[in-house]
Length: 248
Picture (cartoon, rainbow, N blue to C red):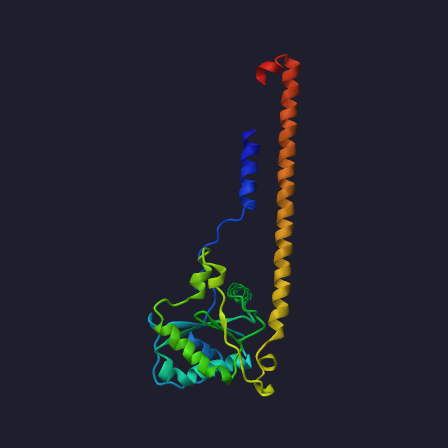
């Protein structure tokens, strides 16, 4: 009886979702600014650059070989002598890394800014869903504003705080006001490949959760049935011994 009860408790603990650990960038494969430049074979255009704890973080979700991601890195490269003291870069490659791709979707859902492709650039609470040169001034302003802020917004710290009000999580999307078709973000920056692959991954996760739940439920039912059979068997034995009322 006790063995069956212990087994039932263990199964229930397996089914109940456990609290997730703190969200940590170290759990993902990332590149810093210089490593990202090297990965895209972009020659450094600045004379000196060093990361430090005073700099703000630009989170860049990119695909290796993405021309618009490369353009954004080239732009940062060109302003590093002037702005490098303000920023450092954490780059997540998402075309070949499924964990980074899942993180991109989670960040997009949290900030309530749709992920249509890469680059997906996060600077504080501002999101640049794509890149072309019409964003340059807005990106510079976002970097300096966050650097000078007394309360720097960091999406990873916010995502780890479950008590944050949803209204405080909405990002300010920087819109491209240039209507010239040559600068149209829909034609230039979004990769459809990322979106379709993400849907497939979500379907697999849902299917795995469903199968796990069904198996766990079946195990519980079997354990309960076996336990009931054991109890009924004992009751019948007691009845035969003539002391049913006493043992109950």
